[in-house]
Image (tube, rainbow, N blue to C red; front, side, top):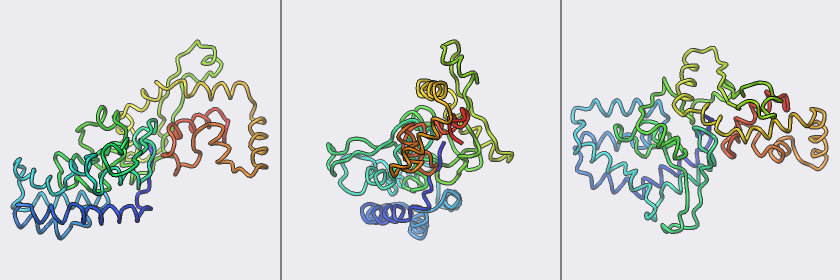
Length: 312
């Protein structure tokens, strides 16, 4: 899992709230037949419901469910869901602010859970046939049980189909047990490592290449979150399935010396390119951690390149 600093995107957050409020929420709240106590809570806390951090959302959701008039009946849950209408928000046919707009504004190009699948957004206009592709949005807090959070921006995680639908599904996430990609930045607390460590054996085709995850943090709470998250998304197995992505790195390491790479970077630098530029051109991924979401396998390859002593 990689980190995306949503808090550093106040404009995206502001657009999300203002657009939802204008295009959906005013009318949805006004026309709702939900009881007055719940409606007042929603109106009084609407901004935080849509823009609040996961901790705020958790507290709001708890307070909401403790109101006397709240119930888990299908009718009540349906009324809440109709106000925070994620189903309508994700429809291709809608010409208002929608999931395509949010995905485009976020600009996250790979799945935040696995960083191996592109989640690019392609839309040429507002008509259904002009909306070509976008990431799925995983609800960190399950929307089926928490309809109040159906449109909360911190609860909408851009992800690939496999991570969202096949692996996570309806699994209930908690902030204490699983990593939240908008909040938790553990990028330096775990590393991908290849097995076996004998590069020549791998190149000779004598050994199957596998990838394991090593956890470096000594904090038990962080260790548990990293372990549970990586196990749920089967990151070791999934990355092991992409051995061809790594064999090229081993081939490079086996054929070229470290001195060659130093000279290569120096040569490119004379052409006005930065180390990051050269790294991206040579290895096809990003070096800077804040940019990992732009290209698949950026985290995996950086860790392996370090293990192979190709980069510092």
